[in-house]
Length: 415
Image: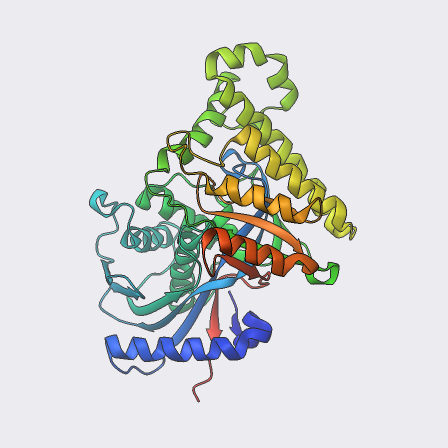
């Protein structure tokens, strides 16, 4: 992990971000008092582009770090306690003397802090106490992975304060996933943490989860006349954990029938050859979700090649294909347990009505509630934004850019 300037991290938005960091310093001092040698860290949210729910079965994904992030003003301490005050939340006080899993702490930010620290220690890295104030513009529950950004932020802080920045981005992502799985209690894959930690527009192949293959792709959608939009449908993820958990469980049940652990270890041909037995043993939804896995895995490769070739139309067509597969086969657009809540379906219908075959739209992130993603022609951006905000309220449509830098320490001028 390197030290990056505000200009390197935020580009043309650096001046606006300087004001944000200044306000964060004032808030830190109001809570903790004035401190010397303050340090600053940032971790971005992420946008998944292809490979919807494939990472937890060792699949392939395409994702990007985005221009929304969580930042921290930090000072190291020698009391072996991590004290984090996040804007809008109660402070978390985590003692590093006990890094065991606390059941009563699950589903809290404290569990993520403890889990990341435990992951650092288990991997032979140094840990220590610090005080931090954090503030985030990564929408919570938006599919932009605010939790992954927070985990990567804590990892970046421990890396910068106590390990000289020597822990690489991939290892920080793996530790962050460990914290979310084992300490927070959510069975997430590795894509969210990896995209936040690494940044940029990337493909990730998780066939070897210990050493995932990452490839960066240099692409600027603005030169093609498109904007990346995320629409927040204001749906709640509360009580939806069973819906998310069912996806990897069902996919792995298909693999298990072939004596394997994950779908990556079998082929689509093998599944089709025994589809009658798989249907009987696992159910039709599990079969459809497995078929989605195999097809989206191939789409990641095709999308990456289209971008390398500068073939934006093929890329957008594949994004739409992936979105349709999620809708019809992965079936994560609305929860069967809550059929009255179908904000994502409404957003997709509205997007398609406006785009009329141009651009692309699809579910964003885990699904069931939250956000959709759209690549919108600049000529239709105002119409698209107005329609979505008419449906879901002012400020519900976000126009984002891809951030080339992942979790990092940030150099902020003292003046």
